[in-house]
Image (tube, rainbow over all chains, first blue to last red; front, side, top):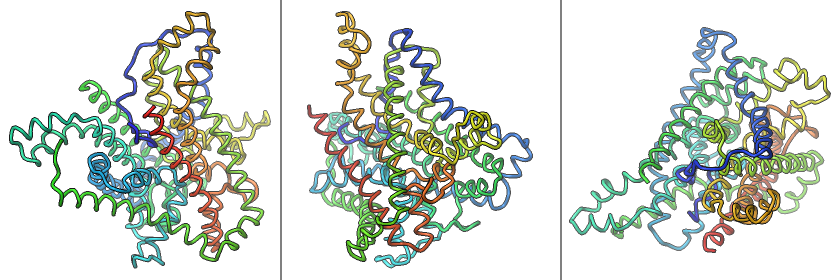
Length: 282
Length: 270
């Protein structure tokens, strides 16, 4: 658990393990009241306002907004690139977690720290940083700025830590004797990986992938300077929403937002189910 | 343990390192080059500009207050979630994670819909009472609180579960009151988790962009934070200034990350 630091997904299995606890005292009930009030004013009421505003123009108004050509193009681009990036993360995130846990080499600690940088770096700076290597003055000779490739790149950057940080702790706590027993019984390396290691990592990979996907469809800051926000080409859903807000059509923005919120809620639901399955197996 | 043949091990190692270098490490170093490309003097000159100083000060102020609120709220709600039983606890615990998966643009929009002074749900009433939220510091602090909300809780809750409540019960049975139990028993054992949570929240708060952009109005010298200034300087062809401010922001966030990773192993070895 030592290295699992920044991201939230690091230790889902630990949560809600103990359902015990004492009943509320007068003081703690007051505390709970204050906390829930603040949470409602800050998060719950504003988010419900989004849903209410989205529904104000009725179902047909909602569908009209979502299926408008430019909005639809933005949603398609966002969901498509997010799925691609999630797939990339499933492969690369698991591979990096494996290297961090099972391999030993000089500089591994540095690699481990660098993984967390995308989580802490301001998103607008992330976009600027990627422009440095993949923009017009690229030392690699790649000019990907203002193309759909830039969207993919930015999403890959900001979602890097999620799968790594969910898989890493699970891999660390994996018992080695099962692998040894399988090997002594003549199982090939590929069989051991496929039949023993991979199944125990699957819930963690799923959880990490869900978080990465949720982050990817919501991304805004890193795309502002990098993607150029060209309608029908590199404009993502968040940027589309912002231009709705700036034009004063908050109802249209709320329609797109409620769609994104539904996806976020779905992801949380999936996570909760996966977590409960993991803790039942443990 | 599964023995990986040496060629494959090297391949995996090289692929992992190359991926992280190309995606993160190398791009991040370009910001250092860009920030100091015209020399250290030019870099310092950026910080003579009044609007840059104002933006950095505003960012520090907003982030500081948001972290403080999230610290108090986070520790409180963690204690409630772990130590007490109440109806709706599982729902609350799941909803707490919601801000992690909400787009910053949606965060900004949601606050705008409730608190704007023209046709928001509460905005007009609050403005009659003289409380202005949207296009003011209060709204910016709220937006920042929203996006960084789960970070302290996610650090503190597992530690509270890990340590159990035997010591707290013992202290209480020996006659300690709630305040003494918290200050003498609970706080020392969650101290490091709180520190990590605060550092992570600080990094997140300093870098907030989308949500603050919507609720602040982005007025130069008034409600323009450092990240918003980076955008406007870059788009206004003041690249060197944008890079210099970005360098400062990146430097602080990298310090936060390195600090956390240096502190953490010490803690687990203890």
